[in-house]
Amino acid sequence: MNLFWQILFDGFIISSIYAVGVVGFSLIFGTAGVLNLSHGAFLVLSAIISWFFISHFHLPLLAGMVVGVLASIAVSYLLFVLLINPIDKSKKIPTTEKEIFILTATLLWSMIIEELLDYFFSSNPVVVPPFVKGVLNLFKMNITYNEILLSFASILILIILWTFINKTKTGKVLLAASMSHDGLAISGIDIKKVYILLWGVYGVLTGLSGALLASFLGASAQSVPSLTGLAFSVVVLGGLGNITGSILAAFLIGYIQTMTAYLISPAYTSIPAYVILVLILMFKPKGLFGRF
Amino acid sequence: MLIPKDRSIIIGIVIFILLIFVPYIFSSYVVGVFTIALYFAVFVMSWDLLFGYSGEVNFGSTFQIGIGAYTAAILNINTHIPLALCIVLGAVAAILSGLILVAPALRLKGPYFGLITLVSVLLLEQFVTIFAQYTGGEIGLSVPGIISVSSKINYYMALLFCAFSAMVMLVIARSPIGLILQASAQDPIEAESLGFNITKYKVLAFGISALFSGLSGALLVFYLGTASVSLVVSIAVVLQIIISAIIGGRRTIIGPILGAFFIILLREWLQPLGQLSYVVVSIMGLIVLLFLPDGIISLFLRKN
Image 1 (cartoon, rainbow over the protein chains, first blue to last red):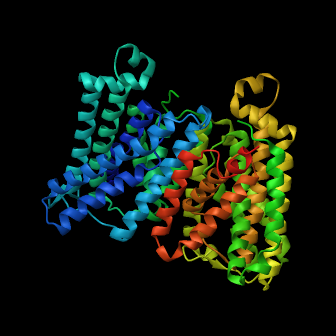
Image 2 (image 1 turned 90 degrees about the horizontal axis):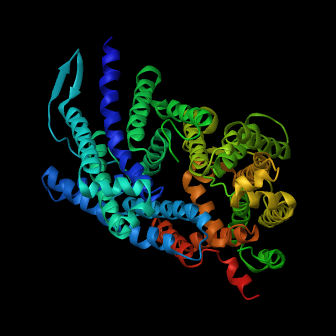
Image 3 (image 1 turned 120 degrees about the vertical axis):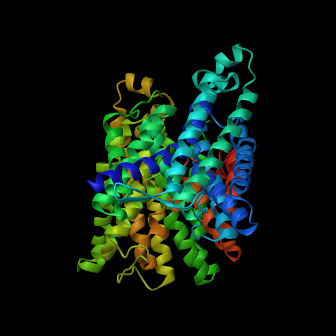
């Protein structure tokens, strides 16, 4: 029985952090059609920058996180200006092949960030210090207050994002962009401004979730590929471009991983999740809630 | 868009003739680097056959390469069958495992197919770590078998193998199969409505790509004497394969050979930079991607 509660709580914590970690990947695909394979690098970058400013310059936790988020926003705009936009505009690249060019370009971008982080901060995992201390005893389990706080913070970010996209005028533009770029143009909205907003939001999201993730799991340059793989799997499983689907899929994968870790062995954590992903795609080729 | 193919064959023959003289000009160390580049070139050509012609984004080349390499290595360590048979069985394993895990996914479109291939690599990486008593885990395996101790013989073996692979793949690419694959990449619905079973041709292309990837992976293991994740499985290897294909000039088969040599020699040359060499290679890759999207080979073809 104890195990049941443990899986239920731990699964919830890890799933909510996964959800906030992958939602940006889903957003950027849904609105701009970009599969950003440097997503993992964004998460690790903001985590390591936050950690560096907190532990070396003794900034308060939140201030350190702000620096991490700023770094993430900067890299996000750089990616857009240096790579995504030129590829999008290029006349030399045939339209049918833009997708592979963007995939390759973002993979290279990821490689550059990963190797630079490795070079400057070594490949040892860093852990962002806990936001609060103390342990809660519940049903004979030990849950740290920090884990609870991380989970709540993740849910809060998701709620704010949802409200922003669905209720505010600026946010609704993103929603509209995910449906039709032509429609936006007809309504007199400059698509350039939409992209500026979008990549900014993406930077904020990856910046925040990177620090949250690193406070729970730790982060190192070497975890970049597996984080990108995680985001890719979760988002495809939920259906590309469907944010709600991504969040549900994050919970599915999070719980499968937690169950594997507790019931089989922590060494096998990611295997059942991958196998189930492959099986689901065989039978539902567009993911669980896909529209593309 | 279509690059005149006869010229690219002439370029291929010129490269082949130039490569024959390499052992007479350079030191045996450089010859060793060229040998690795030749095996790597086969990886890149195999990727190009599948992507360039059928338009499938494949992140899983190292799934086939890795299966081929590890099967051959494990057979060589644990049994007494001859080396050549180990290599052939490695290639067979690469084709079979590819057909079981990845080929069903050929029905899926773009990113979904890409994801399955990516997951196949991540899974293989996990299995190598979990079954460490057979695979050597993260450290890797050293194999007793070796193709030859002479760097010249090794080099010419690799050169012949690379030339043979290039010929087979060029013939396939220029045959009706290649044309049907190209048609399906440009407009799958139209190609299908003409009565072609696209999936059948894609599975065929995939099988051939797996065959050469597996063979080359196994040969590379017996050339270097080791099999390890970072050498034949990791995503970083896939990335280098994709970059090489694009830098060289995709959908040409010969272009990928140029790309492979470019990447391997550049990495060798930048070795003193240590880790930063990867950063420089990636930045070079991005520059070619943006300003020369048809690759290095387009420089030679454009003058026509």
